[in-house]
Image (cartoon, rainbow, N blue to C red; front, side, top):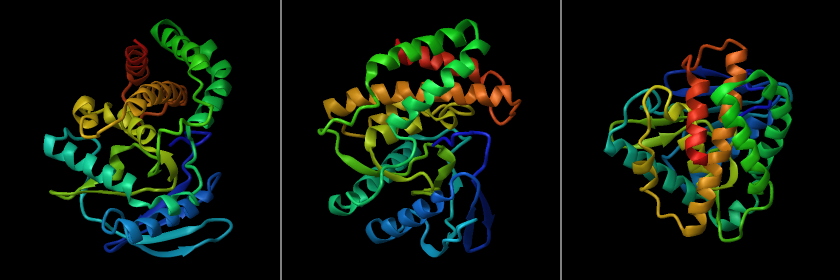
Length: 275
């Protein structure tokens, strides 16, 4: 989901007519291994859901993964119809159910799981708190105060089953071909749980910056247990707090990839979730 230094890109992509070549570099060369593992697992257990794995060169300095190129347009930046939201949910249900339990046990946890994000917020808070005020400071303080009692850095409850997760909620990674949604970008994939993965999508800046994903309609596509609903609430709050920091980092770096009022809007989103 989020590299330690969010402004750093960890891979380069070359798009060819029939294939995509992805070169990993910088601080997260393990992303190449995660990408290749995901593509091979999904080719075996959910063919057609993701690109076909064609080649992998595990070079020490810059691993390369070659995969088929999928048809379709990214779902980010467009208003999604009810049919598209249903197709998005169907793709996620298939992804989460794809890898058999005995195979999933050998898959490492995805990066940026809840415990890692809690530790990261604890590092970020003294760095960023002196530079905010008003509603942004109110939201940060409320989020950090809530986090101290949420215990999200403890092991997950046994009634929350593990799933294979893509690890990235950016709607740009979900391609709509007119009838079906398929998924790309698995460098942050691994063993997870489905409510954390759903929260990755609902709280990602891509789900509201241009066109808002109708979250209630999206989440209604999943038959969540009572335990999952409780964890979903906490995961959404955690990820909303993470995004408040990430957008603050972007704003301080004068990064123009998000709306100019993104920090203020995110502060309100977090306060609404903490409600």
